[in-house]
Amino acid sequence: MTISKRARYALMALMGVGLAFIYVPLSVVVINSFNSSRTFSWPPSSFTTEWWSKAISNTGVRKALSWSLAAGFSATLIALLLGTSLAFAVSRYNFFGKDIISLLVVLPISLPGVVTGIALSNAFNQEIGLSTGLLTIVIGHATFCIVVVYNNALARLRRMGTSLQEASMDLGANGITTFRLITLPNLASALLAGGLLAFGLSFDEIVVTTFTAGPGIETLPIWIYNNLFRPNQAPIVNVVAATLVVVSVIPIYLSQRLSQDSTSGGRF
Amino acid sequence: MKNSVSTWMHKRPKLRLTALLAAPTLWLVVAYLGALGALLITAFFTIDNFTGNIIAKFNLGNFHDILTDPAYRNVVLRTLGIAVSVTIICAVLAVPMAFFMAKIAKQKSQKILVALVLTPLWASYLVKIYAWRTMLEPNTGVMDWILGPIGIHSPGFGGPAIIIGLSYLWLPYMILPIYAGLERLPNSLLDASGDLGARNFYTFRRVVLPLIFPSLVAGSMFTFSLSLGDYITAQIIGGKLQMLGNVVYQNFSINLPFAATIATIPVAIMAIYLWLIRRTGALASL
Image 1 (cartoon, rainbow over the protein chains, first blue to last red):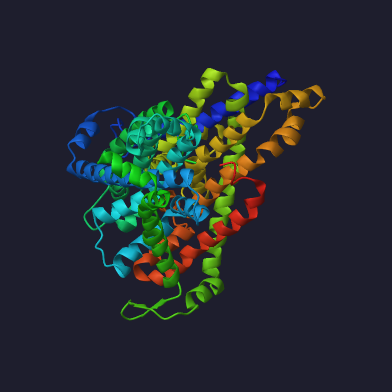
Image 2 (cartoon, rainbow over the protein chains, first blue to last red; image 1 turned 90 degrees about the horizontal axis):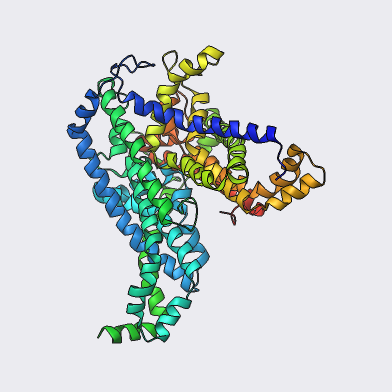
């Protein structure tokens, strides 16, 4: 290609600046979790692993983690069931209101979280009198998780076509056998990628959770938020934050291996 | 038995469709759309000033208050200003990065770069804003430590901090659509433009930019809409500055109808935005 050397170097430099912009703050969080100063003055004068051992035995963190895992797994399960069946319906059938339903499924992540949050909270409290707790968190999370499973499954189903299923049926397999032996194995990695993303969204969600969590329930993001402005909790918050930064490498690695349909793992 | 159920279902496509659609439609229409509808109706209610109970009587009082009170107009304009600035900053940062990734980097490093850009999407939202709190802390923050020697100082907590924080959060959402757009753009077009005598920048302006414009708009949908509704960032690094989301959040527990009314503003702005960009083809390029 005819791009001058100077332009190449300039672009490379801009790429470097961009990556620095992305990674310097994240690195600071990780480094700060070892900073021995309680006020986290920068640059750190000495390092310690004291905060890490304290954080691991911190009951608040442990409890928050278990709430987050419970909410994440339940929401992911619901999203997998609803998102996949919707993807089947949209990819394999024509029906009235198809455009509307495919728009509706995107709406929960397109609208600001605060709107979804107060709408659900209002519905739970005022309209149906459902007291807020883990169940309401799961309902809220599942609502915006459906779309990522749906996107992944739909892309795969469209790419797959129907010829494999038709061949299977022609060879005498019935609908259930075909689904079990042909459709599901072909769909599996897309569902895994979608489920992973759904879990990631749920695990990280704070806005909708703020409005749908009952009293006494703190998911991990809510715990971080509640302790963010408490100076004596700052070391623990730093460790939790650093852990979340480091752990984020795992899903990105998995999703890159799983999904060939899109670079973003179906987030878009 | 299994076979007969399967055959029975196979002969009834309508029934299969209904079975597939029932649960998701019920969830999305009844639970979600129902909740949104109820909220919209609440926006037309008021509260009893003494008891704080909601009075279910239709009136436009809340909308009148918002349109006439300059304080709310300022919040709307400020939020819009922030969302536009964030979108512009993200676009300016994202285009050269995406171009490098798609057209200059070698195949192997291309994959790594995509992963590097994607990884922060999985890092916790809250942690990223928290990181900027440490970065921007006046005098003792990391930014003053790195950039202080060359005369750049942290803007402190406030509007600029919110813009930096939100740009940081949504940058990957801008890079990825543009990267995808550039990948689709054949190299031969750049070669042809160069062969016809166009310099780098001219090719970029007249060939590349018009072709990736839909991707840019697609990215802007994320950066713009995600910024419009945000309030956590403003709470953590915004100092005393308020965005639309903060006003909604504060009114939520004391005056729900009013909160609902304000919540319609970002939704309305987004609807107008989507209507404006519908002809650019951005929606199809997602």
